[in-house]
Length: 367
Image 1 (spheres, rainbow, N blue to C red):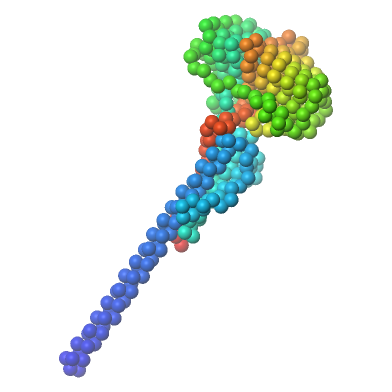
Image 2 (tube, rainbow, N blue to C red; image 1 turned 60 degrees about the vertical axis):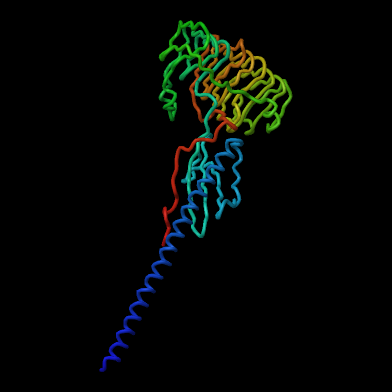
């Protein structure tokens, strides 16, 4: 073979090798770009899913009952959507103040999905709150903190004690059983297991918008109404006094312009989230017999009075918001256990907090 033929073959082989190397470099560049594009798309999809979570939290802070899924919301180069559930990922019903959110973000062909559980924050974190003065009479036992924006009196036979572990599940934030008062005097003749603290801190008192409750009530009844037997679930608004005579309400609220009187017992399973359990605008809440209430008991005027031999258990908070409100018994007993899950939250103030976070798929699905 002559030198010219050898050079030609060598040149041809060189071109082939360079072509192969060039092709490999191009293929690698294309592959790396595809990987980079997928990474960018996946990252964008992740933050879009997070945006959906924040959108849902913001929506819930204004209206806890707004649980419709969002449509596909365009944001930048992608979209997000979310769905809100009242059950956990095994189908079990969540506590009333918790919801599960699944948010999906999509960008450049990549999909990321995030699941969170959020918890609404109750307005109060005390078992009893009052303005001006709180008087705990004999037969009253409060399992949790007491706060009064004024003076306090715990009479002999009244107790402020550590929350009872028999309440299941116990609230670890409610174990302190302290008495806080902002006034000048605290007369303690009964038992306070925690500390008696004179404070300058003012906490927001729970409020009931009676007009809003009436507008959204399932049943609006005239004053003088007597409710008995097993009641249909829902919110009852009474334009005056109301008597509960041996009544059972599994899921609902009783809100009255006037006095609430309980005869022959009242068994209450809890209010729709965002509503008080029992609330009156004037007069007393009087109990004759046995009563169990889960939620906020709101005394708009003269407080709670238990008749002779009566017993009442409240799982939630008792709020006495008038200057002359008091909790008293006449040889009866009243136990108040702080339970946040039955209490109205803080709509419009801050988004519900995230207590659980999980991504539901591979972080970077590059395959």
